[in-house]
Length: 334
Ligand code: SF4
Image 1 (tube, rainbow, N blue to C red):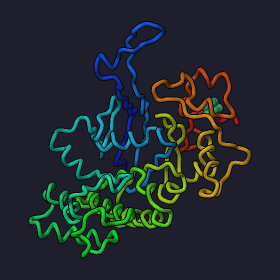
Image 2 (image 1 turned 90 degrees about the horizontal axis):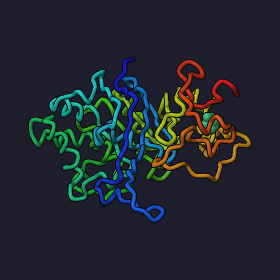
Image 3 (image 1 turned 180 degrees about the horizontal axis):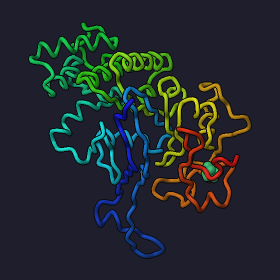
Image 4 (image 1 turned 90 degrees about the vertical axis):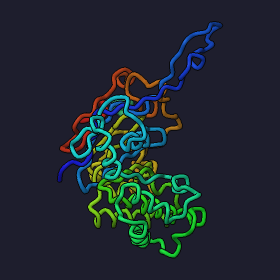
C-alpha cells in the first residue's frame, strides 16, 4: 500500500477578536487589550494508506471536524502541511487544486443541511458531474446520476423530488451519491451516521464499506462513537483538545488501549464496544477550554493517574509497540 494522505504537524487556530473594539476588555477597573485565539488543532500528524479507512475519534470540541474541514480545503491551515498523493496541497496551483477537489470529497454529518433544499435530487447529483465536465451532455450526466442513486439505494423515479421529501437515512444516501458523482479516490466522512437512528446507521455503514471495496476508496472517518469506527476502520487516532493522544491499529486501540483518555472513551460505551474498563468511572469534570490550554497534559483534570509532572509537562507521543503510540507520562510504566 502507498500513502494517499499525509497530515504533518497541522495547526488550526481562529482569532475570535477581529476588530480593535472586539479586543477592548474591561478588567479590574481598567480597559485592557486582549486577543482570544481558539486553538482548535495543535500540531497533529498522521497518514492514510491508499484503500484504508482511518478513524479520527474524540468528544465534541476535540478538533476532529476542524481537521476534516482543513483537509478538504474549507479552512486554510495556520501551520503545518497536508500532502495528497505525495504533493503538498499548499504548493498546488489553481488547476491542481481544481483536480484535487475532484479526488477528495466530503460526506457531512447533517445530510439535510448539506443538500440544497431548492434543488431536486437529480440536480444535486448531476451538478458536480457537469461542473467537472465528466459527461458530454446533460443526458449522459443524468444517466450517471440514475445509476449512482440506484447504487446507494434511492429509486431512480424519486430523483425529481426535493431533499425535504426524504428521510434522514435517504438524505445521507443522496449525500453519498453526490460525493461519488466525481469518482473520488478519497472521502472525508464527518460523523456521517451520528444524526441517524441506530438501525439506519448500520445500513449506511454497510453501504460505505461496500463502496470502499467496489471503488477502492480511502476514507478519513470522523466519529465520536468508537463502535462506529471499530466496524469500519483498520487504524485510528484518538484526539483530545486538538492533539492526538493515541494512535494505532483497531486491535491495539480496542484490545489494549494505553492512554487513560482512550480507556475512558471505551468505559463510556460499554454496551457498544463490549469492553468496559472495570472501576473506571467517568469524571464529572469538563474538558479545559481551547482558549486557554493547560501547560501540561490537557487530560490532567479528568485523569485518575495524574501526577504533579502531568500538570507542568506536556507528554509527547511515544511508541508503546510497533505502530501504536500514546501521549502519556505513564506510557510504558503502568
Ligand atoms: Fe493522565 Fe498524566 Fe497520562 Fe495525562 S500524562 S493521561 S494526566 S497520567
